[in-house]
Length: 183
Image (cartoon, rainbow, N blue to C red; front, side, top):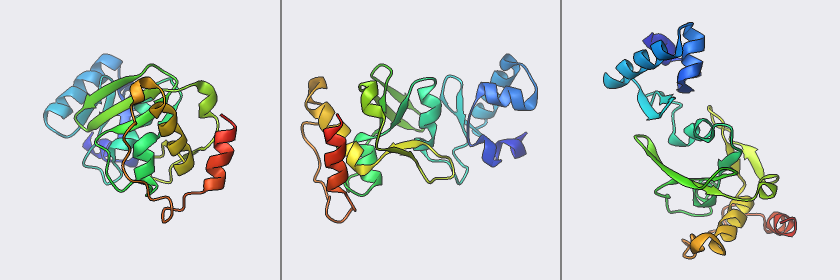
């Protein structure tokens, strides 16, 4: 069992995926996973989502596709700006743009903030990460646009921004202008 959970296929996974792979019922899978969590072999991220935090491919951002469920969404805002080197400060939370409702989730692997944006703003400037466990992430230009969008709305969430380093990060101002024109 532990060999299976240390494989690359079970770094972050759902109870349903585990039950299907092992060929057991959902309730039996939930009990087995709970026991493994109690023994600290696994971490329960949230209901139905598990992570092998000791696996070398694990990173809390890799949980985002599982936390979104059937919603559209991607890593954005200050989190994506940090990933692209535009912001040097490490955000305390993993910030996600979503078509679902705004909410936050405190889990054992990290704090996630989900911000609702218009579905038409989710069509461009987003690509899959190049990590072993891929997730959708906004380009630096798209992340800045999303951040500014929320700064002007939604209780002025990002009214105070950290210092931006657009010169050395490879930030493409023409791409930013193109995205801005399409919103």
